[in-house]
Length: 148
Image 1 (cartoon, helix red, strand yellow):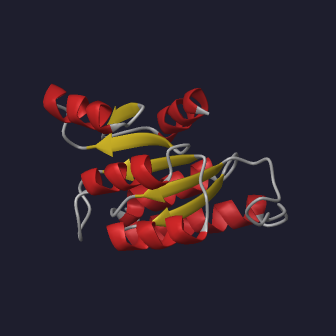
Image 2: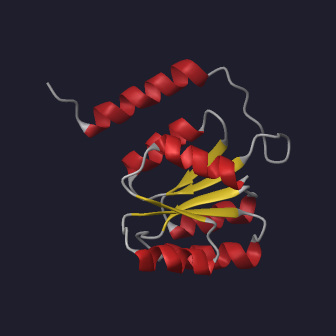
C-alpha cells in the first residue's frame, strides 16, 4: 500500500523530532550556526528541505513573499534559499529586496525552469547560485555551504 503525502510528511516529521528533539535551539545572534531563510511554496519540498537542512543550519521556512518579508524584518539570515515562482508575488522581487536591504545575505535560487535565460536573470539580479528542480536536498546543502 502506498503512503499518502500527508503520511509521508508525518513520518518525516516524527523521524526528525525523534532524532533532533534534544538539540538546543538558539535565538538570533546567540549562535554560530548559520541561519537560512527558506522560501518555498510547495509544502512537501519545503518540509523536506527544512528537515534536511535543519541538521546543520537554523532554518526559518516561509511559503510566500509576504511571509519572507516579515521574517526578514524580524531576523537576519546568512543565506536565503528561494523559489522564484511564489503564489503572492514573484520571487524576483525578493532578490531585489535582499540585495537592497540585506546585502550580506547570500542568495540561492531554486527554479523549475531549467532554461539558460532564467539562470542568467537570477545571477544578473544578484543570486550567487541557481539550482534546478527537481533537486536533491544534499545538493542544496552543498550549494549553501559553498556560499557561506
